[in-house]
Length: 247
Image 1: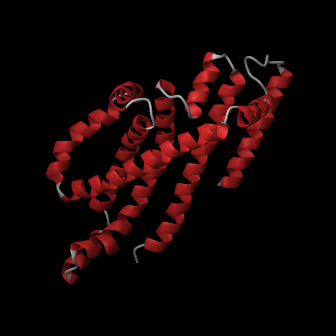
Image 2: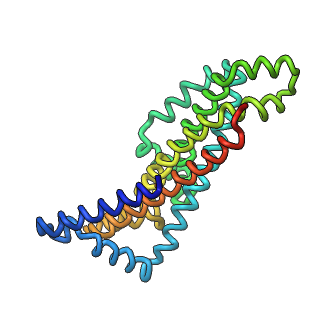
Image 3: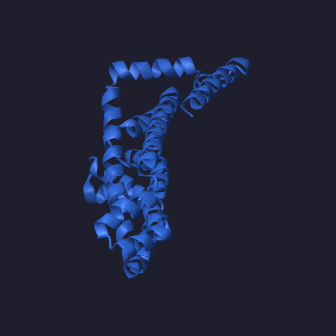
């Protein structure tokens, strides 16, 4: 999949270059890949781009980990206690369906302009797909293995460790894969609304200065980071499924 992605990226760059050259598109509308690369290299040398990348990465990682852990724990609780799920579901759906671009200003007012509001926003968007995957995996897992656990009189922890977790793992990892793309979006929204560093901040600065090369460069950088996160989750999924597969 990585090789196909690289091939697609190369094809996109070639097509992009051809369009700029054939139609003689002005650089202020659509700079070519070389111009974008030069602009990004300039930011690395003169605008501490590495620092901005680290800020965004740290926010994404922290928010993703928090959202994943809370989502897994909530999924276990909801699967065990349906009444709690029925009570909490309207609140969760209300939070998830609310436009994130409307939530971000509230978080900024409550938590300030630092990394905290971005981390919370990322955790919010990560929580739901992970929680839904956990509930689905636990509730609709291998019924025959559950019967076997009852016959063998396994403890709750033994049942969770050897039966429920392996059966829930595929759906949880699928939810985490979805959450990686949502986390990237939430990070950018948070930094666009209010930040003084980060990739989203540079993107906003490029927009304000009508610097198309910076905007395109930051979008491509965010896309590459999102792709890397997705591939990491896919790698974990492939290795985990082989290790925890029920037999």
